[in-house]
Length: 389
Image 1 (cartoon, one colour):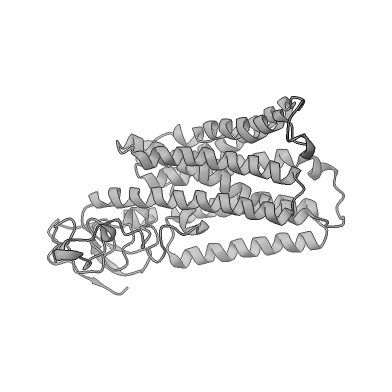
Image 2 (cartoon, one colour; image 1 turned 90 degrees about the vertical axis):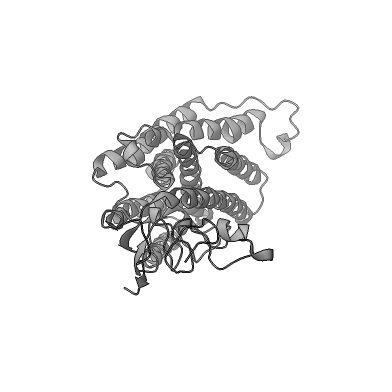
């Protein structure tokens, strides 16, 4: 069939395997619909979801199909349940350690599962997760040594105990400096030209951000880890544990991932308003998270309200990450040649270019094992067909 949008002859299917557009959707006078080509109703990395859906795993684990994604969701749920059990039992020190490492360990497993690193696991993991942890350790130690807020003379916020120096240092300066330094391990990754797709930049950036999060959390809670008794009354620790296990790593990973993805797009010569907006969004979200959390805690509001605020900021950040990655996948997957492969999402045997004609997933987001198993065929797609696995 001929695609309504890119005018290429492609295999019959729901989606064009060349440009990824949703087929058979025409507007008035038979003109192709712009929304079908942008297809924001069908996220390029996981077509069953809308782009504007703050899903953690389909955003930050883009190489995995639906089956594997569910496995990681269950693992995350089990980890959270374990933290809750430790909290109820009064084992706060153990709960802090599990909360600190939960998301980073899951991401390390994902990197191995999807083989994002290809044939150089030590170099990739050392520069991303390890490099992020080193930067996090050094920067957090410097932050704790330098923190000395200015007195709040005449400060209208004095009645809630927040000084001008606290706001400027913890709420503005620290987040900006962190976002400037966290991406460095991914940006200076050796042999980074072997990982040209934007989705690779996103994954490496998230890994660096999660490494940073581990070091930052360990330093921040070092006094609690060394001074708390083995067992104590749980109290209100559940709120800090929730931030530590969920929102803090997601913020650090998503913000860094989006900045690195924008740099990857720039290196491909595709820098546009959405990439510049992504960098700005990462910094703004981090500042809002830190500043808002500080003000809400000092205002003595309900800790649950603090968690709701953090969830809103992280959710907005995840949506922008999806928006940036979706458009990058639509552009980059369109340049792939025809090959025989297995769709990582719907598991159909297909002859396709950049997109599965059955479910529409961008094949550049496939695990590297599937990418290497592609069998190139001639550019003429007249004999292309698809069938069940």
